[in-house]
Amino acid sequence: MKFIALVFLAAISSSFAAENLLINGDFETDSNNPPAGWLEFWSRTKDAGALALDEKTFYGGKRSLTVTHSDSNDWSVAQAKQIDVEPGEIFRIGGRLKCENA
Image 1 (cartoon, rainbow, N blue to C red):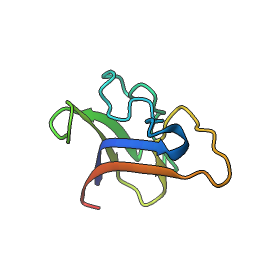
Image 2 (image 1 turned 45 degrees about the vertical axis):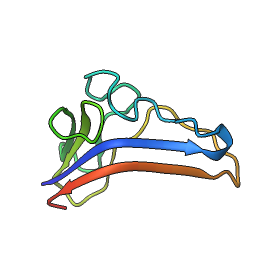
Image 3 (image 1 turned 30 degrees about the vertical axis):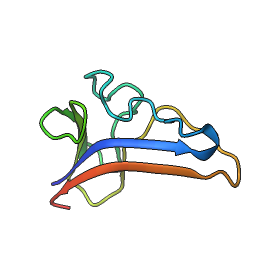
């Protein structure tokens, strides 16, 4: 089983003067599943994975997002908000990941 803790994510556009474009990128806003601003876990194979907020493993703040996935097919965890982009725009994306059994 693959385990990934998404501790902190940030998508920053140079044209937005270092504004964080993600909603709840630090997973601190609420304790819902999925967290506010995020979509449900998706996997090509039904019931092959799940999301959970983790209050034991984190980099900063009080929690991270744990993804478990037990299949070799593709999967996704995504923001609910789409970001409009223009050709030539440059974005800086940062985050912290912890992987086990990858």
